Amino acid sequence: MLTVDDDRLQRAQESLTAHGLDGLLIGPGPDLRYLVGYQAIALERLTCLVIPATGNATLVVPQLEAPAAEASGAERLGVSIKPWAETDDPYALVADLLGGGTRVAVDDAMQARSLLRLAAALDTTPGLAGVVLNGLRRRKSPAEVAALQEAAAAIDAVHAAMGEWLLAGRTERAVAHDIAEAIRGRHETVDFVIVASGPNSASPHHEVSDRVIAAGDPVVVDIGGTTAAGYCSDSTRVYHVGEPARDYAEAYAVLMAAQEAGVNAAVVGAAAETVDAAARGVLADAGLGEFFIHRTGHGIGVETHEHPYLVAGNREPLQVGDAFSVEPGFYVPGRHGARIEDIVVCTESGPVRLNHTSRELHVLSR
Image (tube, rainbow, N blue to C red; front, side, top):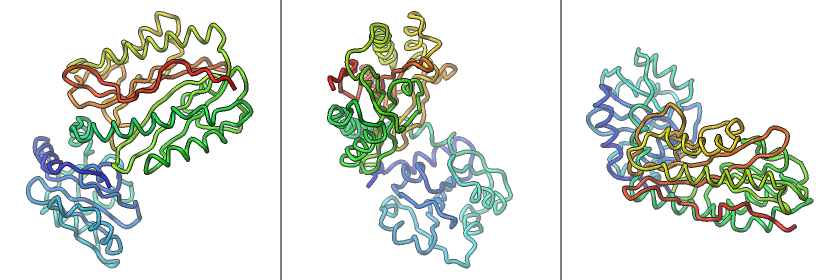
């Protein structure tokens, strides 16, 4: 079960007041899990956490989902649970709970069918709750950092056993199946498995195929899951079946230096874009800049991708407790690619890596 800090709802209320809002409306998804620990099912029936600017929050749920909502522990946080029957109008109920307030924001992932009916019931156009919640979610508490450390250790253990599964003559899909089983053994869910071999390694989000892994192939393995504590892992390592060609080995050495530069730049107070610039500059100086085609990193927490994003143009200063990936790569179309990814946390004493498996090119002998 996701552990929820007792003050999250209070901080959310303080933030929504600062933004001049009357309330927040949160449906099933990561914001609901973050705020009250409830892993709600996204149904056609409305589930909505109503957080007014003042007073206690109410969790509006279909009657048949009331036992699950009660089991989530949300009431421990002072949240009232309000079930609605099949013939009730839950959208009118939400409007009543806001007491006539119309300056509201909805969670960024709310289903359109819920959003549109809430907008009609409130006779307003809601904003996005990200302006209120992103700042709260991005800065991790010590307990959250500990949960991310646990998740990082779990995925590190999977990478440490990769030589058992990643063998020449096997398909990417077969290898991915074994990896997924290993992730599931250490996490609550498997979120993604990328096994990209040979020319497929030049596609950053390739996932898997029936391609047979062969001697001489680089293989990019990017994997992650969510632990029982509710926090995500995400780590990428590169494996090579047999000794790599000289040009690939040299490019990989540059990539290691780029990732190191990116991590070292992730200091409190630095603009998020400086991490991207530091990693990108190393690759550009070596003539690989055109092959680095994505941002350097993304925040991580109860979602694999969340704020802050490490990309050119993001001048937000990094803060103590920010947790994010640093994952530069190079991708030469039709030939090969590589990416190195660690989760990093900003601390007052400098950036701290949470992943600890070797970032060297892992050369497999078979």
